[in-house]
Image 1: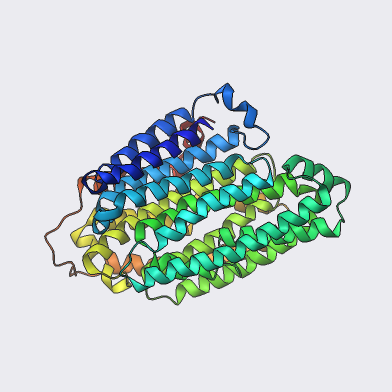
Image 2: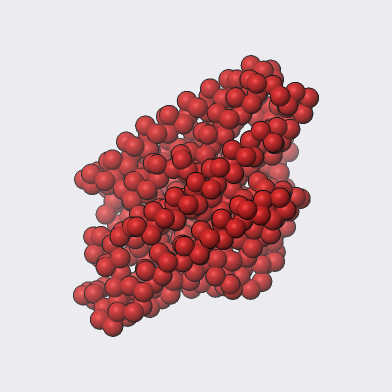
Amino acid sequence: MSVLVIIFLTAVAALFSGVFNQGKFARYIGIAGLLAALYVSYLPEVQFFSQYRAMYEFGTNSALFTKISVVITLLLFFLGGFSFSNHRSHQSELYALMLFALCGAVVLFGYQNLVTLFLGIEILSIPLYVMAGASKSNLRSNEASLKYFLMGCFATGFLLFGITLIYGTSGSFDLYTIHAYALEFPKDTMLIMGMILMLCAMAFKVALAPFHMWSPDVYQGSPSLITTFMMSVVKIAGFYALFRLMTIAFVGVYDEWVNILGVFLIITLFLANVMGLAQSNAKRMLAYSSVSHAGYIALIFFGMNNMSTYYLAFYLFAYALASVGVMMSLIWVEKLKRETSYAAFKGLAKSEPLLATVAAISMLSMAGIPLTAGFMGKLSLFTQAMNGAAFLVLIAVLGSAISIAYYLRLIIAMFFFTESSFKTTEKVTLTYNILAVFIIVAIVALGVYPDLFAMQFGL
């Protein structure tokens, strides 16, 4: 909980820094606070916070996912100087909202009961509704904010109704009390109905089909840095919250929900990859790519073992790194071209070879090409799921094969056009180049030596 307190105080400081110089110091305050939070996440929890253990506990797994999310948010803050240059009058609010959303993610990493789960989801979601509409003069951004808010409210209704049924039948909000009740009464109709409603609500949060309808429009309409935050940190928080809920509270009724998740997975992989092929806009293609990865990640629920949490963390970190890598190139192109179609990327490798390289390697990692972190992440999930869900693994492999086609379209646009379409003397900043090198090295290093992940995150 020390990490949560530090991030919250950093968010408050970043917010009020807007009083001075249009908030130009907010980014640096955020970076300093996130570095402090990352350092504290490696330390033992302060004894004072043990009194809140019934609501929230910062255990080993919570610390792991918190570290991952803080690292990814740090990368986004480094990108913010260029990305938020059009939002100078309210950039302090955007940085603060991002940190408040991160607070919600940290709550989800250690929640102990359903009330804390609800609070974590709302703390994460409400800032996102605002950030999605940050480009006030952009109709797509306004649409994204409104659509995300309305669909989010709809999902919240499902979640609360489910929590009500669970409490009504088990008499408790505590995950472990519900766990014991589910083991004793696995056929309780009210318990199963509540579980299904909560599963549907969480499927919305992680964009599993058929609850993904909001994500392509919201991802395309939101400012690109906010889209990257949704694709990475929000995905990490949502999936670990879902994983914690289903494997602790509802593991006693595993047979009742695992087939439902299997159906979601099949629909997700088929629909997202086919729709990804049909896109002519790179940002919208990446939105469908994000939906497809929700399907791959859902394989974690099949053939579970004592390494499942580690596999989930590795995959989510690999995917988040790749998301930042490809989106940083998209942010640059969008800034110069005012669009994100495939045509806008033509010749990027000639004018900015490092940006094109990090985007290409990131997409190859997303596709699961060997010697990348994404390949090792998919290999771990697929190998685990083979113990009882070989059919789903086959569908996931076919989905990965299809995804290569739409990733290659963007790679071809960047590398296989001799003439650059970038008629500008503006060059990528040193910060972008350093981050590009870092992401390239990290993706390749984790693909070649995956144990590096455990070493770096103190496992």
